Image (cartoon, rainbow, N blue to C red; front, side):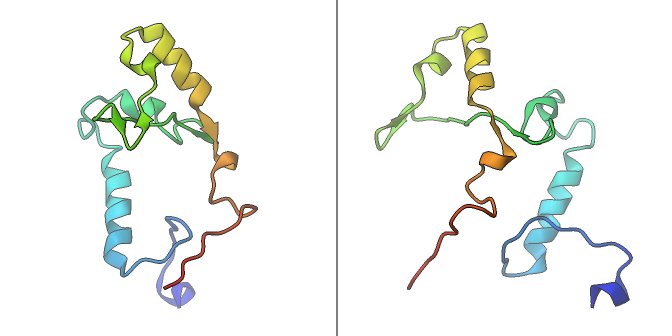
Length: 111
């Protein structure tokens, strides 16, 4: 169908959605982030996932500091900006390490 009614096609990934509305919101959000002033800090887009080809950013943490035994690493609470930056660089991963890569087992769900 697409080859008959569209001149371009865009994929947001390999997964199933309940409708096109969610895909449209993903695309709108991705485009809006490119508009100056949309992000609170324009520098943020330079360091987040996919800003560098094949690189995903470090894990993100929020409050509370500990939840179900999972705790924010002490270095992130230290206030030592150089140590935090070193931790972030060490924790970055490549897109080839993603768990949803084609070579990894796919999750299965049963009801």
